[in-house]
Length: 300
Image (cartoon, rainbow, N blue to C red; front, side, top):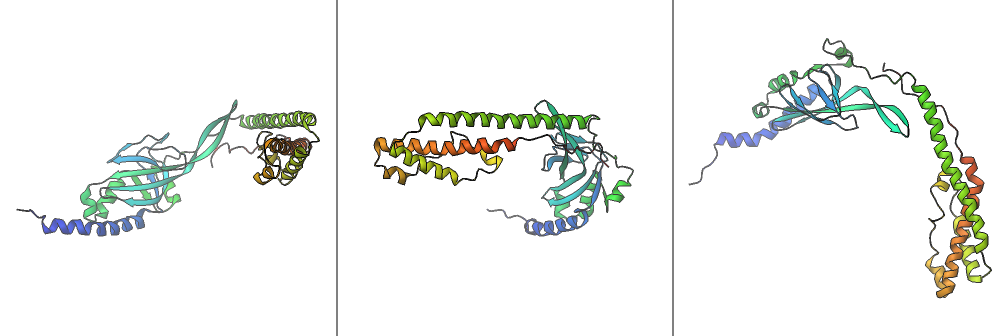
């Protein structure tokens, strides 16, 4: 004989999503946009996404790169209610100072930190639409406030400030800018030297063959149709990166050796224009170190 679930259980399963949606709206109205001060340590990778923090009671588990002690100030951006969990998405207004390497230099920049608190709840709290019970659970890990100013007046706030940059960081930035300019200029000079070499070699390859000259003229026109007035356009191309002659032009030569001569001329015509334009324009692309704005030495 089949056994049927009690009517009360069926009704509970049917109505739980409705109550959950209502409960989620109630929680959002009370918590979304609120300022909070944490009562537990939380973690974040500070990499542009919310880092998971699993919360069970007052125990928090996470593998975030940065650890923030209890008393951290945050703003709740989103509330997401599950069957037995509520996820809070927090943004920390105070950034962290992140170091990065560029060549022999250590540079510093600010990074914003985001936290996701996945708070485990008794399922009965959700099914019973128990806002008070859920807020009691959240109250064990967060102190809620109506404004940032109010939260900052809390005795729980840890008053964390972003670490300052090293005292000689301005000199580091100046040295880095000079080094960066040297790297860029070395690349430009290498391109200029290559352009002289390639255009010099072309004079030994140019012939009076009609098929070659037809291809050469077509290559010159093709390259003149490309905008090479910008430094980026010149540096992004190379002598080995030109396109082949159009198939229609190949067909007009009748194929065979004539087609090969046309193709060689087409390539050489492109290389000549590219080389001459590189020699003419690249010297104006040399860069000079500019004063680089430093990260504030301390957070206000």
